[in-house]
Length: 117
Image (cartoon, rainbow, N blue to C red):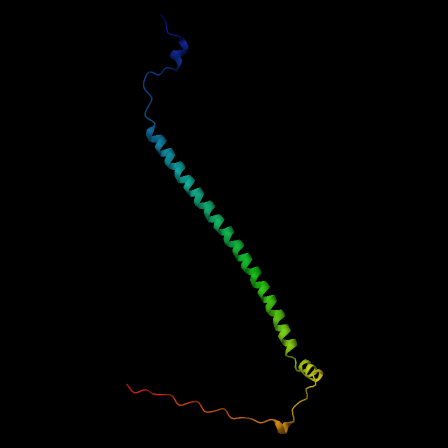
């Protein structure tokens, strides 16, 4: 009996060479490429995260500078001598006569205590 002709076309006379080494190299290259891609994505993610963090810190610093400016303005307004004189006069206060102002000398500091051993 004769074998079909199609079978003879696809049949090889010798066995196929071992491709285990080729597959191992391809898997190794794919693993390295994947590792490098993951590292690149991770570093880009870190850059974006730090950018957002920096933006948030800059916004907070701007907000704090604005709050400081408002508080400085309020302090200047509240400590204005003309305003204080007006409030004092509204409460019935009058400036003290110069003769009633006395300057006191501070007490001398106490002597240090030395303990004998």
